[in-house]
Image 1 (cartoon, rainbow, N blue to C red):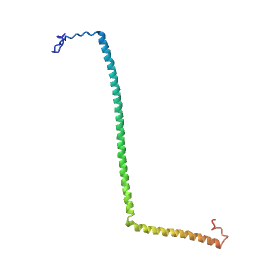
Image 2: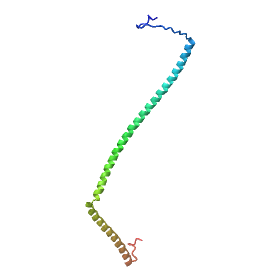
Image 3: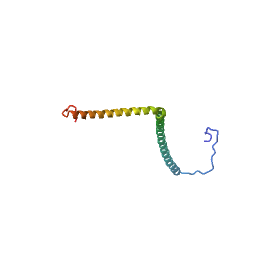
Image 4: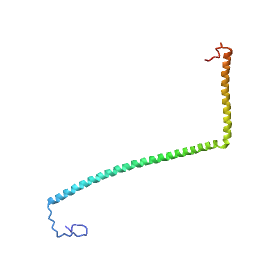
Length: 145
């Protein structure tokens, strides 16, 4: 038997007595088989867990990319709004500077004069209306009451 073995190594038989019965070998095989089945189930469960965690990682990476894009978009909008805000503030500062005060004062005076004319004209119109009614109490054309 040792000579049929093709490698150059020689098989050395031992002096130990190997008197193991078939039933003992069968029992040992069955125990190892049960243990291997348990370990195979554990490996399968672990692979499923790893697979589900990898899928979750992919979902989270997609969500992260979406959030990065959203933040980038919001930053650009914020930059636009802040630049617009700065322009508005600069315009407000420019319009409220001392150079514009005289212009506003002149405009205020002009508006007050226009308001006074309108008020005076309205009062004159009412007075004329009452005066005409006083002169001709039978005139119903001018009476709007």
